[in-house]
Length: 69
Image 1: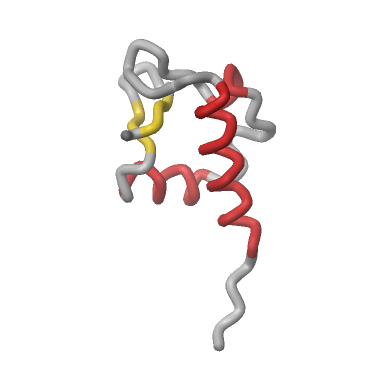
Image 2: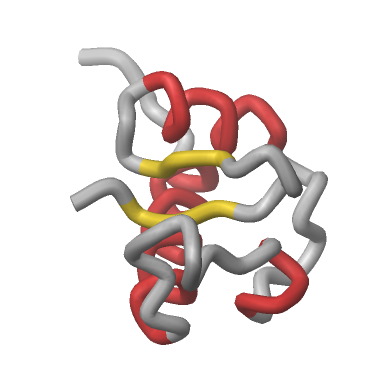
């Protein structure tokens, strides 16, 4: 059984929680990570990129994010 560090999973859950609290569900309501209250928004770029690639998040041209539902 492989060990999987919980940090990326915790980061993913935090991003989803904060964007949900901000009602970021469309391009019009998209928020930057700073606006959503996410600490150290550039600290885990690989997690952010993976969420976009998995289509959990959508990144706008302005660098804001919203949840893909």
